[in-house]
Image (cartoon, rainbow, N blue to C red; front, side):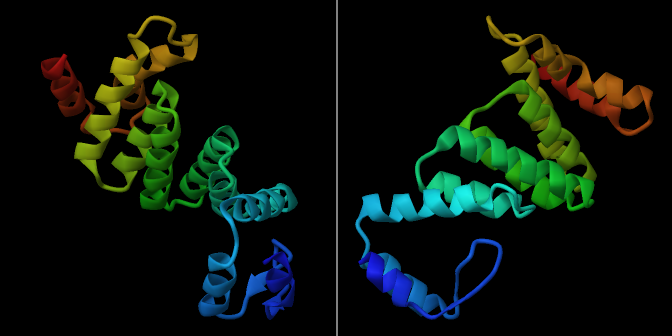
Length: 173
């Protein structure tokens, strides 16, 4: 099956290989065992670590079963999306990172991305989850931001509806 991968028609890109047609990729992938597929994804992820294609790297780490690496690269991808003002993409990626390991820091970042994407309900939900995670025993010192981020963001003028957010968080506590 690995020889099928080598024989597939490819184009060079950041990973070293790109299938010209999705059907070719699907046919090759279907012929691989789970172990072979994971090994290929690991090799691709390792080869791409110097790349700025963070979401692609995260996807390959996830596909090979390396969840910690997938989480780290997913957060990098989310941070990059937010830097590029792609807030919806950032929120989606922070949600993906939270599905791997949910932390108050990820929820705080998710809340901010959701707010700037125009998703106030998602912002409030993330603030509530961040506060919940920050109040658990053993939460990191940085997790305290999860309980105060709405007021902190309000002070610097980034969240005009902070009073609404704080009120919603307070009534749910």
